[in-house]
Image (cartoon, rainbow, N blue to C red; front, side, top):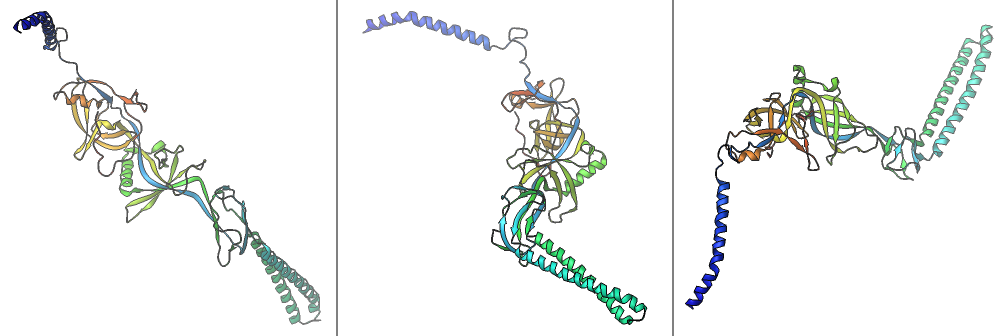
Length: 428
């Protein structure tokens, strides 16, 4: 056994020596690569400054937009009622269709109304006959009373009979006109143009007996009204800002533009305009009621639908907008990071006013031309404090995942922030 052991050791010794030498060479090479880089040598010098994405603060006129809950309402609503009593014979429209003003909707049995009209016509004819006879008598008595052939009393009676007959004729004509009007009510027409809903009665029903029975409802949905409320404090702040010259009305007009956001979050294509704001503040809620008019040519908007209203009330001049992810919002205040020309980072407390399309409107604490850090916060977590950085233009991620250059400052903003501050924005 000892002889066998010696022979195996001697056979593998050259191989082990070769492997050991290779390991030594590899370790030596690694140790050289990991050695501290000397100044001026290959790979020497300080590590490159980390790159961070920045945007340049640029003042611009920013439209102030308030987003509020609202509800749609038809601009005109007409209740179609039966103004003549009778049996409903036929419905002349398709439920849910568009109707024109004066279009026939229902037919009521006209037989009793026709008879009433004929009776009124006959009464008028009798009154006219009596008027002719009374007039002839008065005309005959006139020369006789001048010749004292008849007494003045008889002539006065004849003249009075003539005037009474003429009054009966006038009353008869009014009765005929009334009967014709009632007969016309047998054909129920639409008072306005719009979209009609379902029929509230069916054929064979007795309508208009004692009251004006409601038959259907016609609503004009082009344009539509959207009613919403705004807090009195926001209205007061806006008025004070306008009086101080901080804001100017959009496009120089007092009628603010309105955009509607549907329930699914999509924006309605056609903008509207503000019609009025109520002068009275609701004592229970502290809200002010407003109404806007929105065009609805395709009938996409329906009465009673809840929507979001973006109301552009004014414009802030020389305001600066920055991406939301650049701002940290806390209970202690809003801050952002500013990169100086030499790459130093400093924290800045700013005053935030509004937000829209992932942009904050900065009213105070930031100057034009300063570089606001938007991206690269995670890189700095691994660096010691005070490490200089290299500022590069921030590229806004595109919807498809690609990156696209972002404007230094957006030109649109949103509603004045109210209530508690939002949660801290996530930093990249």
